Length: 340
Image (cartoon, rainbow, N blue to C red; front, side):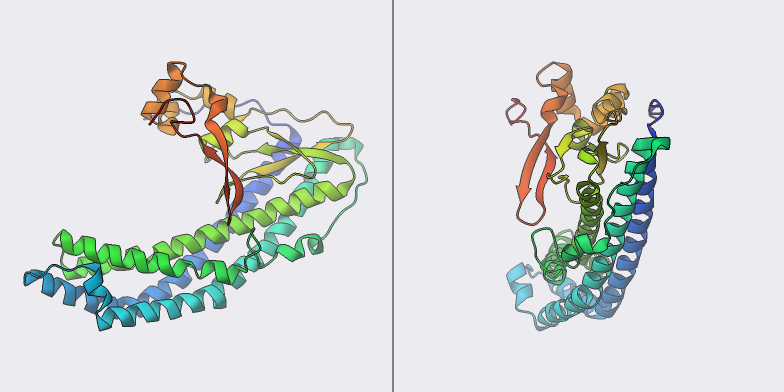
């Protein structure tokens, strides 16, 4: 059993307030994920019988000595029926439920982000207090219902369909190759099709969190009292890249870059107030036990780091996606000068 993570010094009030809002956001996210998963289960239940029949037919053929290939399955009438029904079901899920649920979450999260920013500014000034311009959700309304690249959410969510079909097919072919029974293969196919759900959840979590960050940063920009902001990471779940970027400074016009499912928060740099200081992700990492550091970094990188082949600051790199925009990522072995 790993030793407990060392305690950090008490957080400044503004950090404590933002962590409370982050916890509220996490609770909302958990509720949304459960609701979306329940809706997806309805799809699986409606598809169960056809999937079981296809699994049985293919298992029977395999038992008779036939080699089942993807090309063969593609030509099967039952597979075509399943594929068409799945497209229809996922279309209903994407356009009739998931896109609307995510858009509603975006609006709620944007409002929560605005409230968090207002509370953070007040906490920064403390008892002195100050007047600052307050915005409402209309300032971020244009993003509601859209992804970060401007794609309508329903169109982006429909891309869950190929993932679901691929997951189903892979489970079928792999199950037959391993000699599994038809009932187990059918169960694996249903589980494999949940790759579509995983994509939908990724989209919902990412776009709702983006709305929260946008609400906060827009409030900071419009406040008239904020000169910029800093990255605050959720250390318990952060990747190595975000840990090393904790405390990163942004100008007011910048965007707080984060990766899909990211949980970074913007801390305001308020005029006339000394920027808050907290235990950064790098300091947090350095206080972990060797086993905990190795678990986060992996054996090979850990050994190279301890050998002095790279510095912790080198771990954070940026990447760009047409869908997700700029986001932090962990450096590759080659980028760290380790080859491979």
